Image (cartoon, rainbow, N blue to C red; front, side):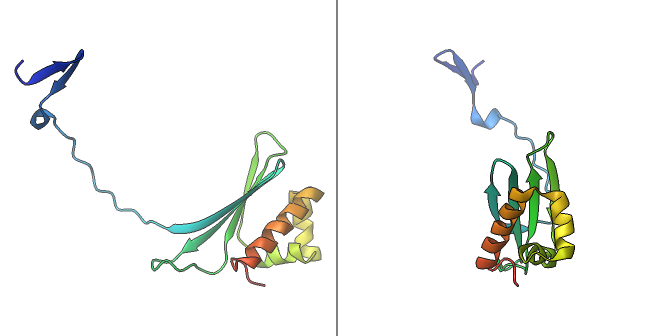
Length: 125
């Protein structure tokens, strides 16, 4: 019992007696990214821009849309910049799908997100 000491009712052991478990080295394929989140009562839009190994961004971005109007919430991943621009510009083909995904307010919110992403050069017209 000489290798332990009690201080204020707590027992401690000498440091050289504490055994450590070796940590396994795991090889990861790691990706860094920039992110922006936009949230309302109806939807959450999370934009992600992947970064190259040198820290510069790839062209474009992905948008994860969470529809909070339904339980459980419905999540969709969007990655087509042409479709994003089509919704912004009220393109008939793009709007077919947009009208299925969003309510009127949701379309307005999505367009606002797209405008912001264009302003910060994450989406190019």
